[in-house]
Image (cartoon, rainbow, N blue to C red; front, side):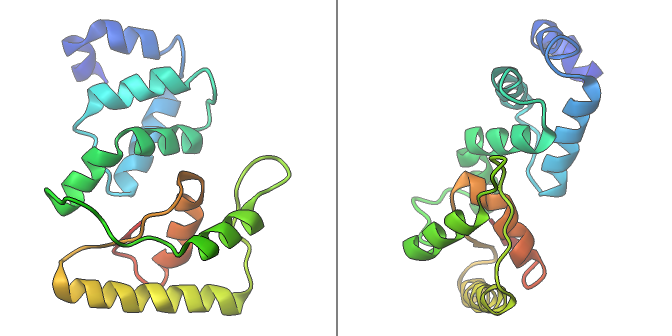
Length: 163
């Protein structure tokens, strides 16, 4: 942040410590890196943090907002110049996952039957293997609120699938 603060001081001054503590910004950036999201576009990341800071101080929520804002940038870094992606959750399955994952507190946690979880992992693993024969990267596109729980579910079966 010190390096970026020299290049764009007003943006950094507006973000920290006024809107978010430096530890939260650090946590968000580390979380993005742990998900293999490049943070080269720090100007847009900080912009998204500034826009979202009033709504939440939670690093997970901030990270989700940034992923949505940088969606095109992330896809371009993973797949290069691609016209469209054709790998998405089947709409009825996505709807079912969304219904069973809502918490009364407003959060999201994916608590599903072990058999269904196993079937999802197996299907994702087979699909990723088929796609791996065509391209070097496999991805699954889903709604933003389901992305993290689905990624955690699939990570055990196929750690290199992008969600």
